[in-house]
Image 1 (cartoon, rainbow, N blue to C red):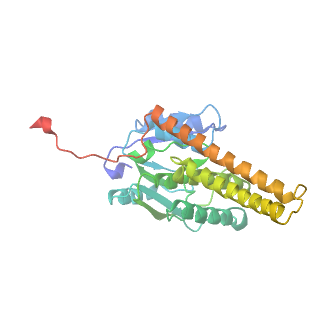
Image 2: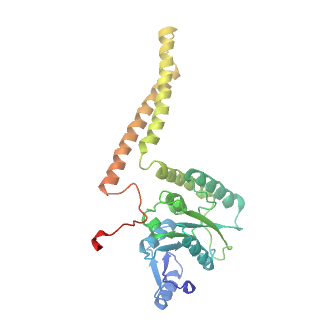
Image 3: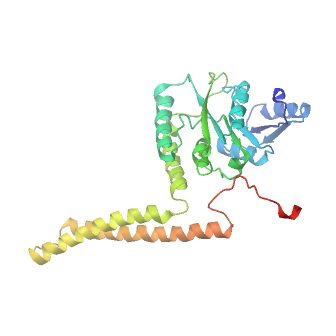
Amino acid sequence: MKKQKQGYELIFVNDGSLDRSAEILEGIQRRDKNVVVINFSRNFGQTASLAAGFARVRGEIIIAMDGDLQSAPEEIPAFLEKIEEGYDVVSGRRVNRKISFFSRKLPSLIANKIMAKLSGVPLHDFGATFKAYRRFIIDNIQLYGELHRFIPALASNLTTKIVEIPISDAERQHGKSNYGISRTFRVIFDLITVKFLLSFSTRPLHVFGMLGLLSGGSGFLILVFMAAKKLILHVNIGTEPMLLLGAILSIIGVQFVSLGVIAEIVVRTYYESQDKKIYHIKSVFEHNQDSE
C-alpha cells in the first residue's frame, strides 16, 4: 500500500476468533496508525464482518478480502487500475482453484451461472470476497443474512460499470473452510432474495399479482368447466375433486393478490417513512450562481 503513494487505512475485523488473532492484531495496530481493529464479541459470520468494516471505512475506494491468506494483497494494484479506468465495482475471479469438484466447485459453478442470469451481471465468481468498490456503492447497499457474496448483483441497481479480473487462489494453509455442499440450499434461498430485491422490491404486486392471476384464473376456468357439466350435461359434480381444486385455486388467487396489495402498502410506507429514494445519485455537477 505504501507503493500506491496515497492515503490508506487497513481495517481488520476479527469475527470472534478463539485463537490469538485479537492479541496479534492489537499489537499491529499499536505499531501502525493506519490500522484499525474491530473485535466482535462472538462469531457473527462473514456478512456481518464485511458490514462492520464497510460501516467504519473513510476512503473513497474500498477493497474487501478474506484473511485466510488465500488472496494475495500484491494484486490490490490491479483492482485500483480498473477503478481508475472508470469502473465502480471490480470483482475478483478465482482461477485454478484447488477445491473439491463435487462438493464445492460444481455447486459454485451452478450458483454463479444462475446468479449471472437472474441479475444480468456477467460475472463468473460472485463468491470471491476480493473486490473493490467505489464509496457510493457501499453506502447504498444494506447487508444482512448471507448476501455478501451477491454484492455485485445488488450493485447492478446502482451502476452498470462492473468488471471482473482474474485473481490467484492459493491453497488454504491453516484452518478448515466452513463452506461446502451443505450451504447450497442457503445459496438458493439467497438467490431468490436477491432476485426479488432486484426486480420487485419497489413493485411487489407485480410478482404476487401474477401468481394470483395464474392461480385464480386457473381456478375460475375449472369452475366454469364444472358449471357447464352441471348445467348442460346434468352431471352430479358435488363429489368431483376438480370442483374442490377449482375453489381452492380461486381462493389462493385472491389471497395472492391481497398479499401483493398489502406488500405495496408496506413498501410505500417503508420508503416514505424513511425518506428513501427509489434512485441513487452518484454525483451532481451544477453552476453555483451564488458565486457570481
